[in-house]
Image 1 (tube, helix red, strand yellow):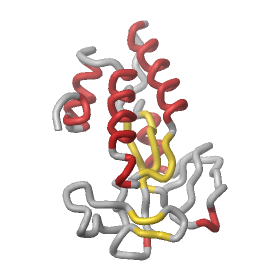
Image 2 (tube, one colour):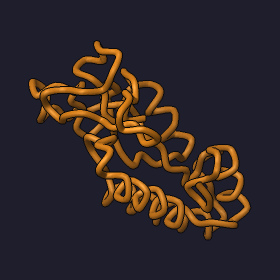
Image 3 (spheres, one colour):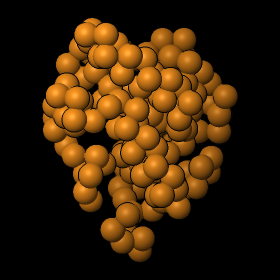
Length: 158
């Protein structure tokens, strides 16, 4: 993997701070990669519109000389067991298919406070209770290297 999506989080954050790439470029690259890998079923929710809006805002702040933090403009994902304000959190279960928390989990709140941009929620087995990622709500998540073996759980989508 090369280009923006091949960068480590540390490398991408440094490239963002150095203005070698913009937040919009980073988010668009990650969203394109998510779409290209959609057959893997690794994401239960993608926040494309919100992520692009936040990326544009981050770029405008940076252009004005302001920064929201060390992760300013860095795209990130979280497993669907983790609460995200105003973004569906299903715990991999149809029982919570429409659940939308009002607050972020502490880790998400801290990442966002540091300037990171949530691009989506990755699949997990129902309530995280299986050693592989397969559930009645969203189906099986495929291993990107070998579709004949499990991608594991509870972070199969990650």
